[in-house]
Image 1 (cartoon, rainbow, N blue to C red):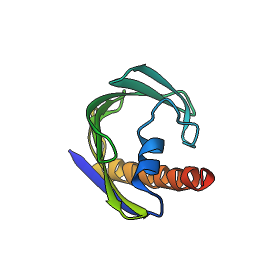
Image 2: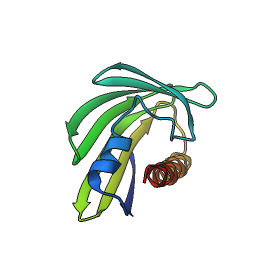
Image 3: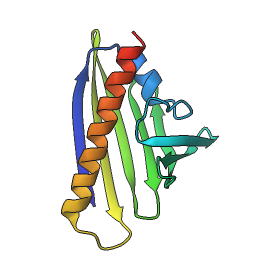
Length: 133
């Protein structure tokens, strides 16, 4: 498995960060998605701008503390964990993604792809939080 972890400190209260991140039905803030279908409380599917689907199954949800899910698409399968740590008026987030490719792809390419995706996700999150001030 290939694991990539991103940590960031956001100058927003943990409740606000949680409200944006842990609401898959409202993903208009994400620049990499065209839409999201919520199937039920535990399952949703994200579609990239080109229409490529990834299905997510929630495995843990602790309000304002932790959100985890399994993910799978035609190229990979894995697990994502989001940790939310209250730091007064700020929030520390730690996003960890561990995946395994279905086809034999170079580990470096997968790692670079995951890092790029996580960087974009954090940029979009910061932008979304700034707009809701």
